[in-house]
Image (cartoon, rainbow, N blue to C red; front, side, top):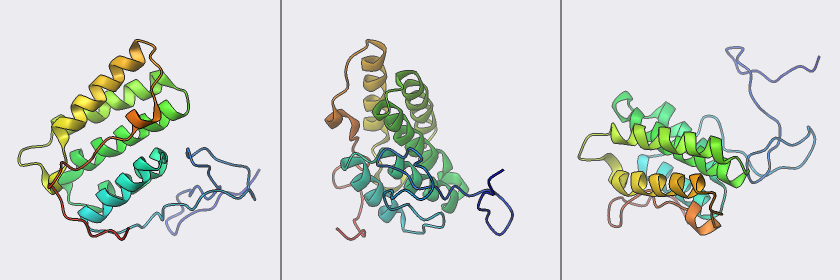
Length: 167
């Protein structure tokens, strides 16, 4: 049996290279750069980095950034970051051709974002993202082909957050 890489607590780590859509590649293959497990940024940094990845069509990697925020931010912000990460995974499933999985995760992410109290932290456009996810789920249910430009949700409402992520 192949030995898996493990962290200092003995938990398995996925060190296999991945492609742009986050699919594992065979060991030894050259994949895209990975998001570090211990990524630590400001809230604006997490949001800007995730937005850049979404805009580049790399939703799985945006999910990893948002998951790092979910793990590193205060507990009261967890529904926000978890909802955003689930939306990004939903987009990943659309990109991979799994409409049922996409719809489930988009619904789950929208539900988590509905739990976020006003004022929404960090300028995140929860209302716009919930509407976007609902519309996307409707398109998936109707069997519509989803063009790539519809898979680039805007995380922060215009003027809603500060940018501290280098371009």
